[in-house]
Length: 376
Image 1 (cartoon, one colour):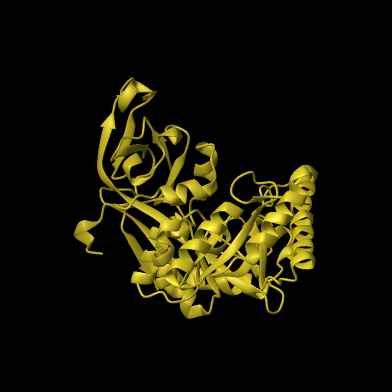
Image 2 (image 1 turned 90 degrees about the horizontal axis):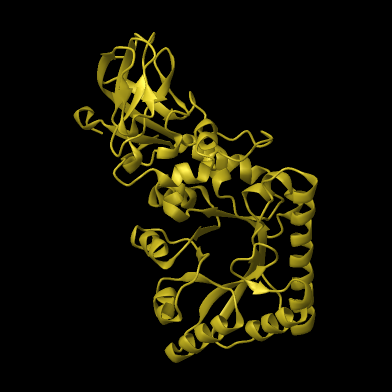
């Protein structure tokens, strides 16, 4: 990037991404497939760049949220298998088939619609069936009183013409959360998932080639649930390995610059709403980043950013394009100095805790106007 264009940018470490891929892969059982989740622009890291690297490294599958995300990858030269995790209207069945995209099917009615659409084309659509084992989102209902009906619907789905049912999966709700209750719930989800598969295969005689349920939390906390394929998302980008078992490395560093520096006397109010007032003579820096760049306004006055010489407390309400930091005593910092919002010198969890959210949201929130700079 041209130095004269520097305002704010996100540095993406490709060596760290390679490191994370290899360490996760090494922890998997022999023969277990690796699906890299690259939805939401690869959690803000750049879907095409990440998918291209995963393809080069030998990953088995990619996952996206919607058809637009899948087509972006296909148009960008990605030829490896892609699974859409969300819903695609059956009217786009031809687009799915022509682009060799695997579609999630979460109900019998949807399976029948895809089957009819594919039959009308004289072609087959590759699908993965999704079970709702406790996430209460997409998926065939199969818990409790829905078990028998769910089994029946699944058995009817796997024999529909013009559908190539390759896999079956579910999603865990609390596999990344500590505590006995969360462990119990995750194990119940896994047990139900396995029972449903066994019963469907017994009744229908159909065999699922790929069974997958291990998201990031399960890859770390429940390695025995890897089955035929795992689906690391946040884990791939270096977050979520709270135990440090996999020795992963964060891949994104969010950086901005100091636009100007001023000295304010005690009693000076700062930014919109006057939510911060100086209590001493203050050396205040204005940073070239705000909520339009992805910095949550909620963290105003609740966090610090890494600057040369230490941490600078953020002061006043975060604006659309700018925010302020207290540089008192940090004389190494000058106009154009780099400021790390999160990265190796300022843990993203400090910001996510201040925002009462999770790192996923901060990574995905980094806006399109923040250029991604790929570090080789």
